[in-house]
Amino acid sequence: MINMKIIKSIVFTTIFLIVYTNCFSQLKGFFVPINIQKAYSKKTRSFDGKPGIVYWQNRSDYKIKVALNPKSLLVEGEETITYLNNSPDTLRRIIFHLFPNMYKKGNMRDTDIDPADESDGLVIDKMAVNGKEVPISLSSDFIYIEHTLLRLNLETPLKPQKQTSIDISWHYTLNKGSQIRTGEVDSTSFFIAYFFPRIAVYDDIDGWNYYKYTSDSEFYNEFGNFDVSISMPKNYLVWATGVLKNPEEVLNDKYLNRYKAANQSNVIMHIVDTADLKLRDFTKSDTNTWKFKAENVTDFVFGTSNHYLWDATSIIVDSKTGRKLFLDAAYNKDSKDFYNVISIARQSVELMCNSFPGYPFPFPKETVFNGLSEMEYPMMANDRSSDDIHYTTDLTAHEIFHSYFPFYCGFNEVNYAWMDEGITSFATYQMVSTMDSGYEKVCYIDEYRPYMGTYLDLPVFTLSNSIRRPAYDFMSYPKPALFFIFLKDVIGTDLFNKSFQEFIVRWNGKHPTPYDLFNTISTISGQNISWLIKPWIFEYGYVDLGVKDISESTGKYLITIERKGNYPAPINLKITYDDDFVDKTHHSAAVWKNGEETYSIEKLTYKKIKKVELIDDYGIDINPMNNSYTLNGWKMNCK
Image (cartoon, rainbow, N blue to C red; front, side, top):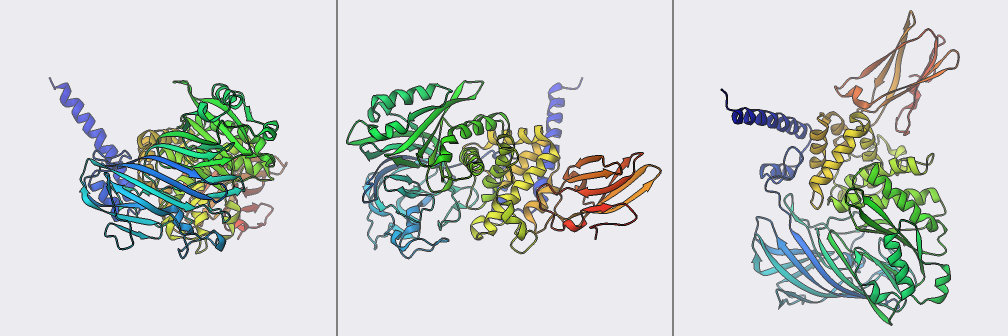
């Protein structure tokens, strides 16, 4: 008798080899940078899309005290960072990001700013490592600052599996105008982001990530816990990343009771309404310290105002556990569109949990703050107001969806902005199709169309921080969004959602690359999708489909579609018969998966076909002149 254990072992090994070989062929189907190849050889990444058996990740936990002076715009803070080295390497230096130095005099930027907003940048007042003070003079052998980077040379190298404690005191002057994701909103309203010294990511791909922040590219931060105390003058309300831990200490009873009620209710409530603005009796003391805690997030931000309205509600985001999300909006009474933001936000979250990605909202709180930007942060969005409620719907849904990508799954936005922005633009398109039917469109697609197929139409995989706008926008938003739209069409909604759900389970709290995403989708869907990935992500190209020919024989028509561009795209065919009856036919981009240049569609009908048209739903076919064919013995618009 054959041993059942041996049979099981053979079966398991065979299945593993099939999956492994398939995934490896997926990875080999397109360009893989040398540094990423090394991660696979070291087994920190695996070919099936999972973290490798020796995947590691460092960690930074922050305890911060910060105060903003609304009159002088002085931001002062002190922090303690506990840094854990989980890598196999001994670290002789630690790299910090000083993002406020983007406004420092003489530093390079991708965006012009008001000269009045130039400052001395973030000034380090004191630094200590494990309680021992570090000299911070310009001649110090321990500290070197260049642009937005600070290098700290360690007196005692940090060995693997060891941790160090770093204390820093610092200050800088907040920008009054020229708001680039942070700064003064009005004379008594502020949004404060990228305000504290933080340790850069040290990962298995590149080691230290040395990128300099110049305003266009976004961020790549390490996961950690944040315990933050924010001191503000009387009647300044504060909204921030994390959960407010001491509402009883800062809010007067009327507002405290409303806050507690909103935390339990699924009804939208007004914690501060227009009548309350006249009273200005929000807080208990002349100076109030607001305490927030956030677990396993990549960043911390806060907004504050003494004259904002405040709406809130709660939503059950996980039906299995009953876990709730506290959802709120803080806004200027003159921002008319923001009166609808809390309901838009609520509907958006419900769609995220139940449609795409169909995964419980990952955080316990989400605030939409009425600032002067269009930017996402963990548990916060900083959104400008608009006279166009359709735009407000799109923006609100878009920024909240970023909670999944890059904040729950820690994408490297500096290198691959297209990952989080492309997936989010796809998701926004899906949500708005339900929430605001007739308005939905792919983000930036109108701006992208004139450049399709030109030298500014770069491959999506192009390193994000190496390109400038407008190419940065095209490669980050509409182009990858179209790829995901077509991918969903190819593998089907169920497998598409299942692939992303599995990807979230595998990579939440970690740092996935594009290959981890592609390999996960390939593994879960069980399909080879390299034929779609390779042109859309790694190659120059464009979409160009045309109606090549129509032949008819005894009631059977053969319609031949030609693919002239190298980007595979779906076929949406509109057929008009001689009695003006219209028939529509859809074929996913999979018809081109084997490199076919033509595809024939057979129609059996007793009617005469009068006209055939290719419908370009997204306006991305670079040559619409060959998209229609009229049968009356002559062709129209067919070249």
